[in-house]
Length: 154
Image 1: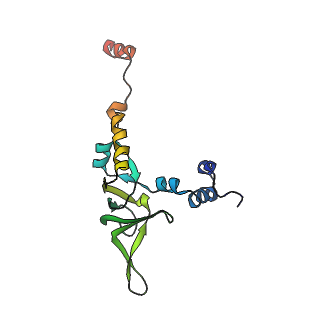
Image 2: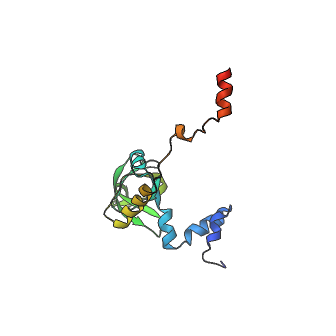
Image 3: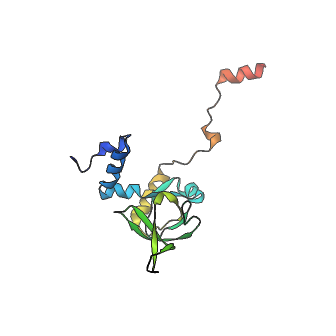
């Protein structure tokens, strides 16, 4: 391996380079990779689609063997890039129950932990810009005056 990490690998179409990018990424980029989608209610409230998962966020698993389980995030592992929930457990061979690692892409955040002032600032910044999610009606282009007159003549 010539280089440990390069930002240029993110644009590669080769799976081996995509894996290399993820495995060798520094912590500030790994944090962004641990983002999960927000629920519909939170999406409308904050105008954002996803946020990095934090400890004490309430989440719902949407895919995988723990599908449907709800609970608080007890731990976020930056090295493994996995999330651990209180209600998602598995049994070891010895019979001991341990928390199962879950990929953040398989989770939807239903309630945010807003104890951190930095996280509040991120959400406030989005609101101040006045950016809101557009509905399909707002996205439709308006008809020009020529098109309107043609329709009136018909």
